[in-house]
Amino acid sequence: MVFSGLCILCMRCNLYGLYDTEGILRVTCSDKEACFAYAKLFELSSIDFSLMPLSDIIDDENN
Image 1 (cartoon, rainbow, N blue to C red):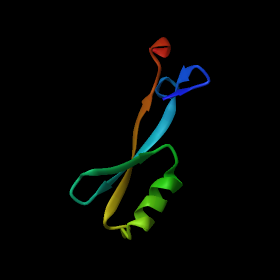
Image 2: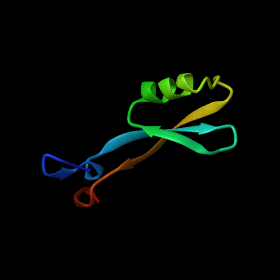
Image 3: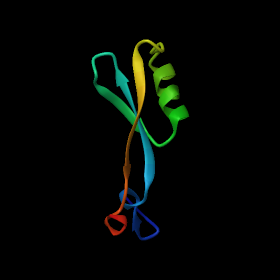
Image 4: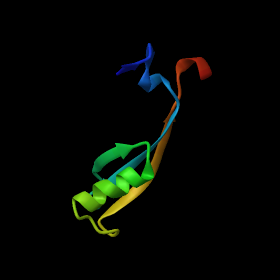
């Protein structure tokens, strides 16, 4: 995805992953509240999922 001449994946982002009880990644978001909204949409109770921070995406210039 390109935005203003920059690849959005090249920008630094905090990402969160929502996993179900079987360990399957259901959704990734840069906003915790969006992950919780996903869980609510699919009627997942708090014991049916876990929210984990994922590694930051950092462009090659910062490595």
